[in-house]
Length: 234
Image (cartoon, one colour):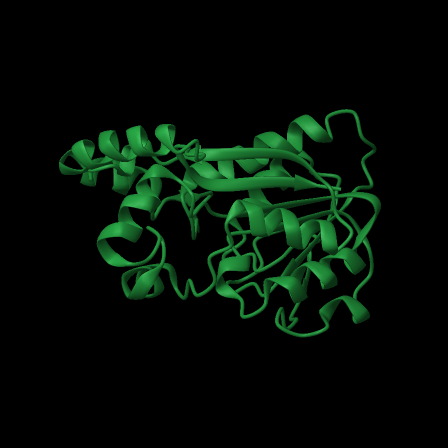
């Protein structure tokens, strides 16, 4: 892995706020939000779940300063003017006590939780009918992840190393399961965006990658170069 590249995507800041994920995910999510809501009214209500230090919320607030923001589980002084903060248990029935929102951001959260089915059921209660949910999670189906499974028995962002480095990745949710849970919970996936995994493929992995691609082609199995999946749901 290119250490210089790793430093460029992890441990970055936005307006002096720590970004607790791959910075490319925040940039991509902000771009998606801007495209989806470019011609929407100024009174959009937004919930950012497990907002960390508030870097993503601040990035979006800079694009849409008139929106109404609520931040959940913020572990830093609130950097946002006029934003509301709250504490909720994402493993519990949090949707029963919360208002509805036009836009809910759930970025790099689901893989930290005990029960992704519960998260979706509760999110259905807080996303207003016609509203939008943007949710991201590590993709465990990529070529890189398949190699990691073969070598170490877990996907790239998981296992003991992933648990320590990520602050607690415990639940991989592959794409097929994400779609199943979303559908059963009353959501429809409208878009799948992604951050590429290619920069994390080490040089010594290239022969393994080549052989694995041949095998997957011969067996007609799907493969991709996605590293982090970003879903847009309604």
